[in-house]
Amino acid sequence: MNERKKNVMKAAHALFVEKGYTATSVQDILEKSGISKGTFYNYFPSKSELLISIFEKINLEADERRTEVIAGRPVHDKEVFIRQVKVKMEVNKENNLFALFQGVFISEDEELKKFVKRHHLKELRWMQRRLVEVYGSRVRPYSLDTAISMFGIIQNTLHFLAAIEEDVEVDSVIAYAMRRMDAVVEDIVKTKDVLLDSRLLERWQPEELLIKERKKSRLLQKIGAMQQSADEQADELLRFLQDEAREETPRRLVIETVAKCIPGNEDLLTLIDDFFKG
Amino acid sequence: MNERKKNVMKAAHALFVEKGYTATSVQDILEKSGISKGTFYNYFPSKSELLISIFEKINLEADERRTEVIAGRPVHDKEVFIRQVKVKMEVNKENNLFALFQGVFISEDEELKKFVKRHHLKELRWMQRRLVEVYGSRVRPYSLDTAISMFGIIQNTLHFLAAIEEDVEVDSVIAYAMRRMDAVVEDIVKTKDVLLDSRLLERWQPEELLIKERKKSRLLQKIGAMQQSADEQADELLRFLQDEAREETPRRLVIETVAKCIPGNEDLLTLIDDFFKG
DNA sequence: GATTTTTTTGGACGACCGGTATAATATAAA
DNA sequence: TTTATATTATACCGGTCGTCCAAAAAAATC
Image (cartoon, rainbow over the protein chains, first blue to last red):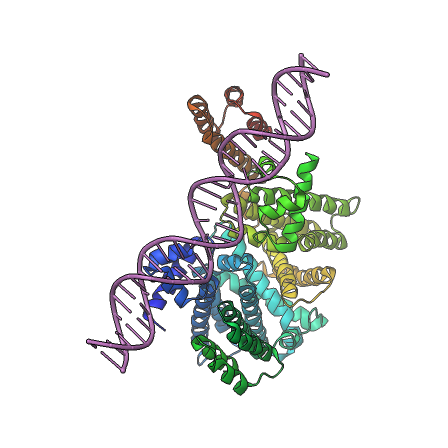
């Protein structure tokens, strides 16, 4: 990625963490990063898309750190699990993600909301999988309940501590939650107490589908944007693309061929390529 | 309260629940409630203060309903406790409070943020107290941990269900959390495992102080607003009131006497009265 | 019923916001 | 050197919340 663009993201990120998403205006970002408005909207289609980019970068880095933690260690090691959870929670804290998520929800940006929701579910699935690895497959039928419970305890505790402005080691909170889960798991396995089907998450929306949905959404958004400034001919082609992209099995060749005939199609072709790559 | 004002609150409430706080413009509220902009800002100092009023009304009603539930029943009855928790959760759901809280957080309105935070802590204290009543005083040293944990499990479960758009009985979620707490409490009492001092909340900020703070804040806000349109003489008096109100022990008679000499002092006197009433 | 006081009206206005458009300029590639 | 691309600065659009104010309506007082 462009070095300059990276710089804008960095400046924006700092501002978002410092003042929050809504309180940071595009103007603020322009001043801090020393670019013009034109360039900004050349880099990012909107303020919220910039936020998404930042999210994606943060999550990518967090996932990498989490993978490093477990490298070469057994999957059932509780300490490793705790350290992995810690990584994510620390990243959340450092980047003020909690507050940023709030900002997102209010933003009335459907795409952004979906993104955050998806992230939450993904995180839940990760924990569900890891809990089965840590506690053994006997907890599998209860793994979703357990993941949600553990997540809830940790989040709510950290939230509480933030509210009363008390500083407690994230480790100790996670370790505490883990000890509680030890007892809960024993009890749950014994009483066979299930609230939610453990396969709910997989059935709900498999990961690939989620990504696909996002790509489609982006593509349709681009098409919509292009329609604004399209002549009659281009508009008809764009409407065709819209319909075809919404089909059960869109025909790649057809879409690409048509897209190539629409003026100003660089981004469009990239998005189409991305859409079919998955 | 003025019938008309009530009506405005009702209309705004409906709009907030329907479209969310940010997406509802003051103009929308004016049209729905059929008042003019002037009247609106005569009733409420700002859009966010209107939201606070609505919150207060909702919480008041929820508290009443919760008191009704326990009327004449033993405090240790688990079923009663579950029904009480249910009341609050249902109110949250009905009024889209979760989404509204998000809206608040973004608003960059410190007063509003404090209000929400305070509400959360108050709710936590309620649950802490009730858990001691339900499980007996042996859980007292662990009551804060337990309250936070239970709250976290319930909230996160409901949040998850909302995210995947699944509808599950709130009862069953709360009852599930309760069953988990049964095991957790046994384990916690046996192992004497404490994370947070159970008196943390009381020590942090006693309820009365919180209310007092809020009243003071409102009073100072009003004074600040009046300064905008005050002549030289009134301004000096207002500045005196400001200083006196910020004193450790403000002198009531002095404040009232001075306030009575300031033109347009109706609201001011009410706020002062309220300030000292506590 | 007449007069005074209070409330309500409705729109102009200011200062912002996110986002678009564009013509001039700077930079890089050919 | 010419051509193509990237960047700039700014005007502009429609929207936000909130202020202000003269005029009208309603309520309270005489």
